[in-house]
Image (tube, rainbow, N blue to C red; front, side):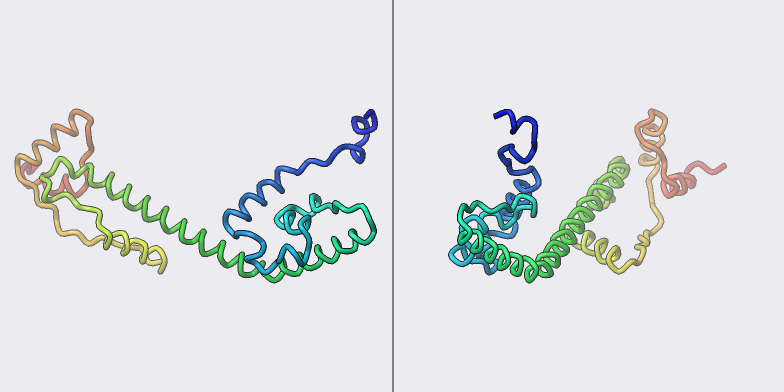
Length: 191
């Protein structure tokens, strides 16, 4: 009544956001606690259901001293399972994050190669570079080994009409000359 409004200890306990978050993600990514070695019959329903909760929300729901002792033994068993499974879970999370990071790097590489090839779109389609699986794999291999990949390109050969298109596009502000394009066009416009 009035005590629950004045004092925290008389309020009805609500499950915290952190416990709901951990419970959702624990069941989603790790599965039921029985997959980790914790059986519902051994520890009791209260301990089994609160397995992924934060410690402050793992409160006993028992009325007798006998049921409280069972709850304590169940929590002890659940804690042992948590400690035993912690190294395996941390390794799995690390590998999942590594995989996700490599996928993001591959996507960023593909996007950057696509933006680089948009400048070459003014060139003929046969001369524009294409993003292939092998180029993504080589990019990832270079990033993992820590080596900087230098793209060795042959000197860019442009025809007179291609140089004129690039000049017009640069004058209209649609694109800028790269150093390679400028060097290739200088042979038609010696100074």
